[in-house]
Image (cartoon, helix red, strand yellow):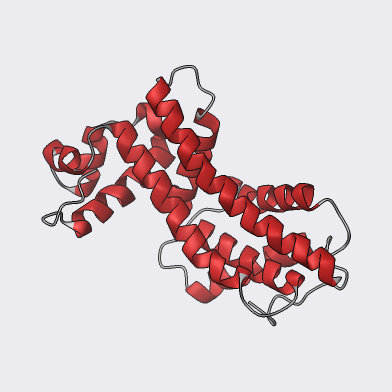
Length: 216
């Protein structure tokens, strides 16, 4: 991916957005560079100027997805409040990001599934493993806060790894039924995210948190 001083970052962002939408709708295998170029309103030459292959573009979308969700969630991990309050705030931010960046989120899911595909070349599999490490680090951030919540008594004493994976799996499952609505107000997205988190974290909290207050 070109990163020189003459690179048009606006064009690169449009390419990433278009690729994420195409990969979500058609899957990686069925999406062509022509599809992405048509969505951007550009030639294939512009796509290849920034990304040397469709797979490198897929990796860039995956990396951007992880950058965005972490940027939205991480401040709450280090914020004020009990472990439970911070976990609620992190989870709301995660779901809010999922609903606003749904196509990017789906690319991460496809990347995780594709890691074991026999159709991948060694270089491609290694590149995916490297990006999946970002996802593992993200999960570890949640696990740390779960452990702190258990330690401070705001969360039930459970297996922190199992609790974290169950929580994140449940949060991520929102993409199975949620569909973006054009111009959906931010406060509606926020309210829906808080309802989902309230349902999920109520099962592990020692005292069911109110998601409208505290660290969120």
